[in-house]
Length: 369
Image (tube, helix red, strand yellow):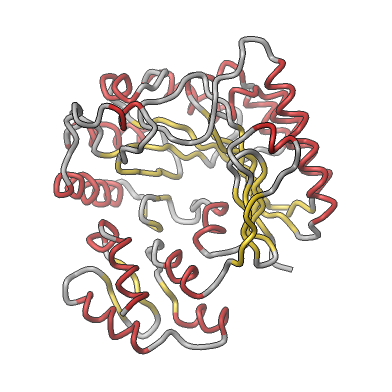
């Protein structure tokens, strides 16, 4: 049986960043709420472990800010994961870390317990940009976090950065990317700022000096070129890594593989069905699963494959669905190739950097023409 990924949502933060619309809340000052959530998450892990007989080759603690749980709770949860599931010998086990909460962590103990990858929320190496985003760490905090993890033996570390932050410049972006390189990390995720409803930025978007589409494109194209010059290859719209250090967990999503997500707001794709937990603590505690639907159809597969620089591989598609990619789609892709939006050859259709900037429109065109 093909291995699955396991996602564990830790819905706590020490404050809400101005741009964030992920489901999370600030815990009370005592540890009771963190302990209560840990207890219910462990119960859910055990229950699903009895239902699913599939190997697990990636485990991802996301949030929120998982590091707020502290290393003891994180290790306790991971130990239960190992007891409940068939964890592959070379499994990738990631935890997201906020540099402002690393005083809660002992990286040495975490490494010994089996964690082997960190995703650290840097966002910027410019102090003013960090304050504008509502981040609660400094650039020095981020560097110390990386160095502490490396001293504990972590050699697979990712940094998140944000593009087109209000008041950002190409020079300040360069400084952020150079900072990432100087930390000797293996992976960088670079996301264009998206102003979402229900966030502080969403409420004040008319007052923010936001960049237009052309300006955002300039930041993005510059990032791709800059990271390439620093040795990071682009393998997905927003993700760059050293060769062989791609996020194996996220590749489960983009390859339309199956995965299990536990925690409020977490989504799953298991046995051809998609379902999720609502963004509600009590409903998760009660084990209420929402809206089961079919997943893994050809359109979904194509949409996800085209997020990757490898693109839609004809042979893999035929192996998955028992039929070739339609000639109509290949002909449509060739029209887009003339506009510089994708590349078409005998093995695949792949979007270009220019195509990634308008990926939703390109993918919709390919699926509907």
